[in-house]
Image (cartoon, rainbow, N blue to C red; front, top):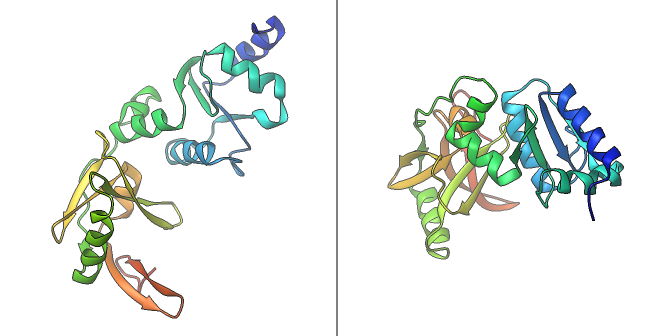
Length: 204
């Protein structure tokens, strides 16, 4: 099925009106899929404002944008009328600094943060990593200090820091927020798990 001329005209107009356009599922405030949420999280770190198109409310654009850029999935980020890619590419470019460059922004501070991992936390982390050989430990810290660990392949653009013999990989924004944090292992009535505490706070 070819792209209808009127749909192409609509997309052309959107890309001409707005330098940065994200075709996504949901809105910037309420993304409706994990990939769209991941992409808005990156853009929110860099831009106070950008244009989004909720393809869930517009079936014509939902299918049309896939044909327009010959890209089969949503979300899709366009900068200056050019297709950048989807969530994975946006995150990779953000980590490497290529996205900042494409947006005309200064490169990210890539200074590895100084963090502390206690012996108990290190022991628990190593146990988890032994069950997932070949995976690297990533830490992501959001603007609200909501933090999450995950085991995933290492990325070329990761910022890497080390504590207690463990490597932790972060994106640029998380690296800034991680400065001075302490990672501990705590046991409460809710269960046991990793806990982050920030400089000047009692814990998180």
